[in-house]
Amino acid sequence: MKMDVLLGLQWGDEGKGKVVDYLAPKYNVVARFQGGPNAGHTLEFDGIKHVLHQIPSGIFRENLKNIIGNGVVLDPVVLKREIEGLGKFNMSVNQNLFISKKATIIIPTHKLLDAAYEKSRGENKIGSTLKGIGPTYQDKIGRVALRVGDIMSPDFDKKYNELVEKHKSVLGFYEYDVKDLPELEKAFFDAVEFFRELNLIDSEYEVNEELANGQRVLAEGAQGSLLDIDFGSYPFVTSSTTMTAGACTGLGVAPSVIGEVFGIFKAYCTRVGSGPFPTELFDEDGERMRKEGNEFGSTTGRPRRCGWIDLPALKYSIMINGVTQLFMMKADVLNIFENIKVCTHYELPDGSTIDKLSFEISEIDAKPVYQTLKGWNCSLAEVNKYEEMPQELKDYVTFLEKELNVSIKMVSVGPDRTQTIMK
Ligand code: GDP
Ligand code: IMO
Ligand code: MG
Image (cartoon, rainbow, N blue to C red; front, side, top):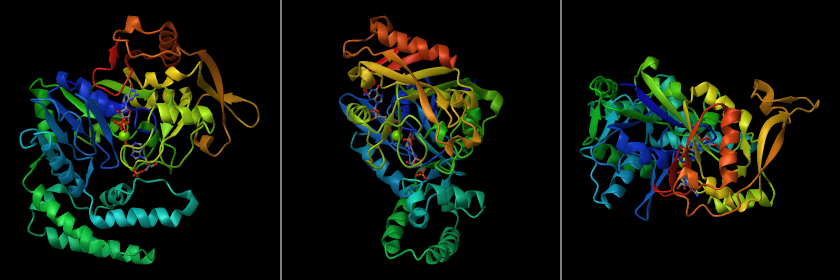
């Protein structure tokens, strides 16, 4: 069997959680391959809203294995809280959550370092979620990190203390206050105890054996392609490989095993944190989009920056990921607009236009060039089938498909599992 990959094509929060949950019954395994508690994936069904940070979004479906792969950076404190939160819904993860022993552990000082680095950047801050993501991946690549399998070692405390001493000297350099550390460490070691009871596995064998046995595996991306460490708007990015290739390294699966690549995008754009955003709206339209789309971060609660859809950026994401099917999310948020704008190119200061994200693009004052389409400007609440969609929405879909050269197979018209239209 091939492994399908689902990922966000913009700056995150495209609605990955909703779609993974929707598609999960077709799969036997759902696996996260990168990122960590910086992610917030929202699922809504039966009138309840769940936000998952580290647990894969297949967790609410029966008889489905959920795997946290080696590419993830994992905070034991957040994981304990998430698992306990699921207990309220009579859900136990003993049977269906598996964690790679090769995943990297976020320790309390990683979070302090994240804050210290951000503070030192002043106005140039990344807008990190402050969950310790950057410093943990730094230690992974620097070959000093702790991994999940290490918590079983009798030397765990020693390894931990060695790393903390390193971190403390860096924090000292930044004159960062560590007075909260003892309290954070107490919660951390509590969570490590809890962690030891979970299903810790060599997940690369598990995933490959499942595939060899004809089982269907879906890899769930976090963040978005425009936050990718190599191809995002560096340095305003996250610290992992958010693209399809990351599913190979983050799960131990060969590139030849990748099947469908589902690219998720909003019918417009949002971004949390700092960094370039060519189509960002600073006017009333942006405000209306934020309000209508309830665009506030699932992890940090910060207001999301909003703007019209950006085709050069989407084309770029489709190219680097090898997207085979597109899913358009939050179409209903555009119900309020009489006209919808689509950015097809950027205009450079010399008057020429491009539709590529070149190395220089974030440095140049590139202005979006828009094409205006007529909006449907009506409720989609009664729309259950593709044929029932207003003609203007169908025209929007057709226009995007033509520009992007990939079929849009799903249109999402609300946050609930049921508000999903397949074409
Ligand atoms: P993720 O990080 O990609 O999983 O996305 P988030 O969960 O952070 O943000 C997406 C938000 O949009 C969540 O609050 C979802 O419940 C919501 N959502 C998803 N699909 C739709 C949709 O089609 N319409 C509306 N109005 N909301 C949606
Ligand atoms: P999901 O999976 C949106 C953004 C942060 C910041 C930058 C770096 O829910 O789509 P980090 O904490 O990774 O060092 O922050 O990346 N960011 C996200 N934005 N959705 C996310 O995840 C994000 N995870 C990180 O806001 O700009
Ligand atoms: Mg999110």
